[in-house]
Amino acid sequence: MDFQGAVEAVIGEYYRGECEAYEALNKVLQIDLVDAGDRLETAAEQIEQLQAQLFQMTQHARRQEDIIRRMNTRLRRQNTLNTWNARLIEQKNEDLRLYEQICTEYFEADPVAKDRWTPHLMFGVDEGETETEDEGMDVLTEEDRAAMDAWLEEVSHPNDLAEL
Image (tube, rainbow, N blue to C red; front, side, top):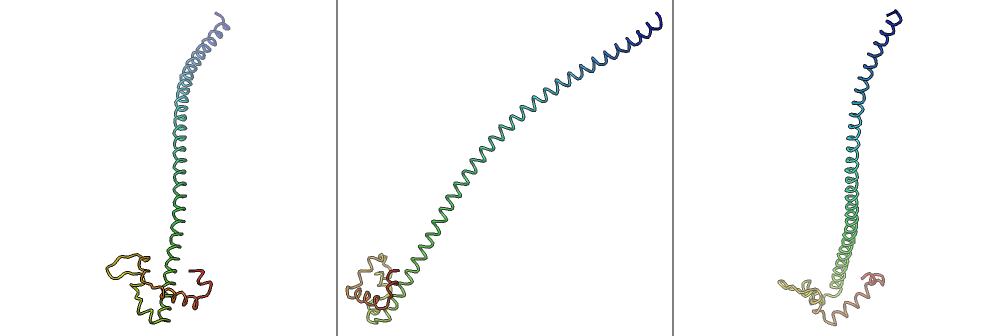
């Protein structure tokens, strides 16, 4: 073997060793690529599952928001009704105060009527009885009603009567 043949043999041996090394590296890389592909597949499946869970949670949150919105609407309506009821009660109390004031002024103006009417007889309820206001109004005679109406016309302004 001559020098050139020896160099070629050494170089060939070197390249053969390099080729074997590259083939071994290629096999390792292919195994790593397959493993990486498997991991990517697994990750993709997990992402799909998480997306499905997120969708379900979003749907649930929307239903909860809808329920809360309806409850808030009901509470606002109830609050409005409570406000109206409070105003009605306040107006009724004011009407009762006005009625009491009118009766007091009438009794002061007509002492004879005061003797016939006592506060518990104005509504027809004696102690221990439970009659309603309408039943108690029967104690008023026609004369008493006429006298009260006449007195109201004398002392009241037309706008006051409209409020009654």
